[in-house]
Image 1: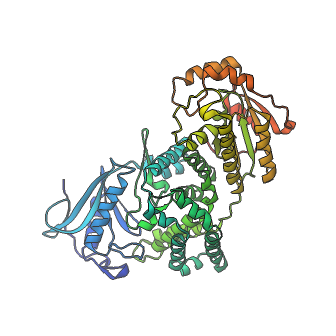
Image 2: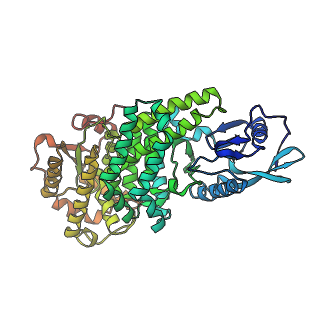
Image 3: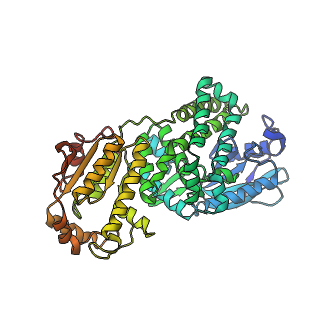
Length: 544
C-alpha cells in the first residue's frame, strides 16, 4: 500500500544544495514528511532511514563524496537496486524491493503514482532488541552469539565471488590507494582531535606495513582470499531471530570497499567489538572464524586491517561531525566517536592482555579434548587449531565429512598425519607471532608429537603446557556410541578405540609443570577454575 505524505510548506533549512553541488529540491519536503509519519527517523552521512510499524524505508541522500556518487536520480535508483540484490545474500527475507518516491498534487508518495522524484529501499522492520549492539549494550551478547556471527560470516565468505577481478582489490597498491584516500580526506579533521604526531604515526605505520609485507597480501590473492564480501560488518548490522542470523547493509555503492580480503571484512566486526570494550569477544570472533575456515593466516594481517577499519569509521564520524545541518547533539557525539576510532587505529601494535602461550591438549579418543579446547579458548582468548579440521581442509573435504579408512591408513596414514601436525604447528607459529596465545587440539599420542609442540614453544620463546585429558575407558566408549549418532568433526569411533588406547604413549618426557592431567568427567566450570593455576585466562565472567 502506498505511503502518502501530506504536503508541507517551506523546509526549515535548505537541502536543495548538498555536497558536490548536487541539486535536488524535493529532498527537504520528502525528508520532513516521512519523518512526521514515521515512528522514528535515523540519519547517516549518506541516507535517511524511516521506521514504520512493520516496514523500513531508506532514502539515499543526493550526495557526492568522492567514494560514492548519489548525485542523480538514476544513480540513486541503481544504488537502491544494488542494495536489495546484494543484501539478499545475507538477509533474503528482509529486503522487499525498491519503491519509487512520487510527487503528485504536492503529495509525496512511496510506491504510488505520479512523477518519480526519488527511490527508496523497502525492508521488513526487525526488532532493535535483537540487534547485536543492543545485546552488547545490555550485557547480553554472549560467546554463543559471537560464534554464530563468526560462523555466518565464514559460510557467507565461502560462497562469495572470487576471481581475477576481485583479486585486484587485494593487491598492495589497491589497498594503499584506499589508505591514502582516508588520510587525504581526514588530514585536518584528525589533527583537530589528536596530536599531529599521532596522526602521522598512524599514516606511517599503515603505509609501512603495506610496503614491508607486500608478499603476504599477494599470497592472500593467490589463495583466493579476496572476495566480493560485505564491506561494512558492524554490530548494528547483525540481528538474531530464532536460529537465524541476518546481516544487513552491505556496501553497494563502491566495489573497492566491498571487494577485499575476507580478513578485511571480518576485521571491521572484530574492531567494532574492541571499540565497544570487548576485546575478549573480538578475539573469540577471530578464533571461531579461523577454526571454521582453517584460515589461521588471517592473524598475520588482522591487526593492520583493524587499524584500517578503525580509521574508516573515524573518517565517517568526522563527516557527520562537520555537517552543519545535523543536530548539535549528533555532531558532538560523532566528534567523540571519531576521536575514539582514531585512537583505536593508533593502537595498531596490539598489546595483548594475556601473554602469548602455547597450550597443547591431547589424550585418547573421546576424552573430551575438543570440548576442553573450545571452552579454554574462550577463557584464554585463543584460537584452537584442531587436527581433524586441518586434515579435512588439506584433503578438500568438509569438516563433518567422515574419513573412515582404518586406524592408521588413508587419511590417517602416519606419513600424512605428520604433514597434518606440521601444518598445525605452522598455524600455531602464525598465531603466536601475532602476539596471541594458541591452543593445539590433537591426540598427541606419542612422546615425539608432544616434544615437537614443546620445541615450537621454546623456539617462539613462550610458555608451554600440555593438558592431558583423561576419562574412564568405559565413559569414552559410551561417548563414542552417542557420537556415532551425531554429525561431528571427529572421526574417532568405537571400533578403533581399543587399538588407539593400546598405542597411547604415557607422558614421561615433559617436566612436571608442563604436564597437567585433566579429569574430563568433572564439570567444565570446575576444570577451568583449576586450570587458572596453569594458564592465564580472562577475568572470571568476562566471556560468559
